[in-house]
Length: 106
Image 1 (cartoon, helix red, strand yellow):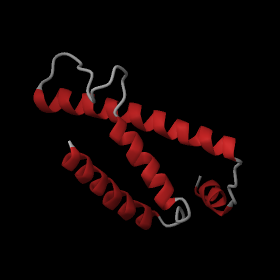
Image 2 (tube, helix red, strand yellow):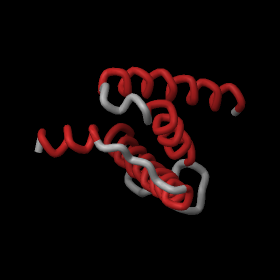
Image 3 (cartoon, one colour):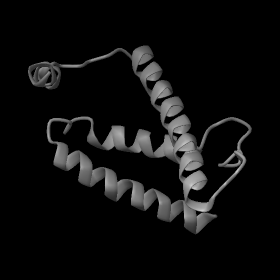
Image 4 (tube, helix red, strand yellow):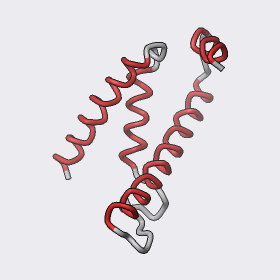
């Protein structure tokens, strides 16, 4: 498994524009659904929620800020994916700034 991961990191992943658009769409959908699931589980255990509410203000099981954060993380860390500490620190900083800006405008 470790060998496969190293081989993946060493590959040159150049995709055409339509493939990159598909990758961005998948990132947005997966991150939005993951964020909704995370918040439902968190509020279920944290506040004793007995029914599932549609968190995030959408009509779908989806939270937009998680999708935006995932795209920001992808764009800022794409070329440095070989350094997990860099990816982790940039993820913390960028999502913190995103949450702060969203809170300020809300």
